[in-house]
Image (cartoon, rainbow, N blue to C red):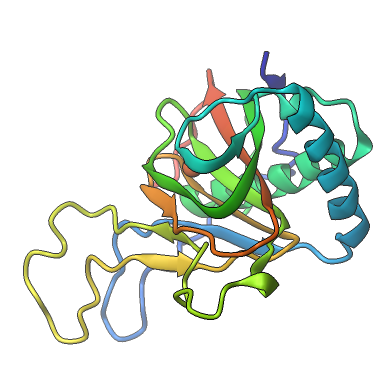
Length: 235
Ligand SMILES: [Fe+2]
């Protein structure tokens, strides 16, 4: 069963603010896609414990293939594992969703009722392992937290973006007509880093390039579902 994040939006007032999409030179950015990208500090001990917990679980959980190739995808019940380290991680995820909701809605703070649930799972990638391109249907936000990057053991001949998570430009047909600078239709590549969390719209197509390290790459993925919410008008 998914966990309930009761009132994750601990917010104080409904102050509407303008999204920063109106530039000073007369240009407006339309349909920006928010990606939460934050490195949490002092996570060494947290990550060390999470590695221990996940490697123990792998011994007893046959897992679930999903989008992963060349690795292990745990059962989707990490959120219910009863460890303080998992609670800390849930706090990080709550931060991410709160910030993404504020930016996406164009408000400085929000407070509304909603049934917010999430699931989380652990991933272990081993040399040559990768995640195929995918989305997370039915969910609002998805993300990943890096516990053990393994990047320092990257093979000499591996590409620079080996093991990076990549996001695909979601705008339909943007790559059809070339323009100077080739700004449209490019993939965004983000490196792994221990203690870093990425969170993004669940509809944003993404993949993980083949990992070339010799040690295990360990992450926790998660999906957030938000239902029965009171809408608010940001126009
Ligand atoms: Fe994913």
